[in-house]
Length: 159
Image 1: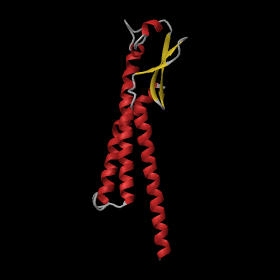
Image 2 (image 1 turned 90 degrees about the vertical axis):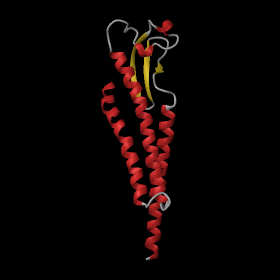
Image 3 (image 1 turned 30 degrees about the horizontal axis):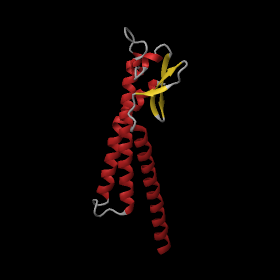
Image 4 (image 1 turned 60 degrees about the vertical axis):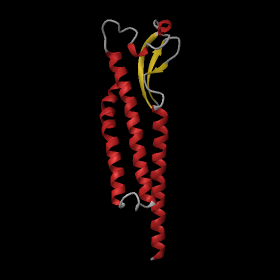
């Protein structure tokens, strides 16, 4: 499951720049920010929000990747795994049995036998920012699509 990181991290490092470029392309085709209509503004805002959301998610993926690499690093001082050594880990040291990676919401979860699993190593702002900006991008794209459909229908009725 952690091998999925090998695909997501490179994609996450590239796609924010692609979406930012798309936002710039939309505004350039519209003749700049001052001449852009509501359709172009909505599409550009959607691409900017998608770029930021993916950038923040990739930041979280880099934290998770570091935790996975640290967890997989064996040798001296590897039990319990280093990412699971949070405040109070000494009381749970005997019960830490492993880890898992969850992608939605993004987190590195330390598994224990009896105390209960607990997430570590992903900044607390990553999942809310990703969710709300992703939702905002989806709303912008949906409204832009509905706006363009309604303007086409109005043009068809005029002719």
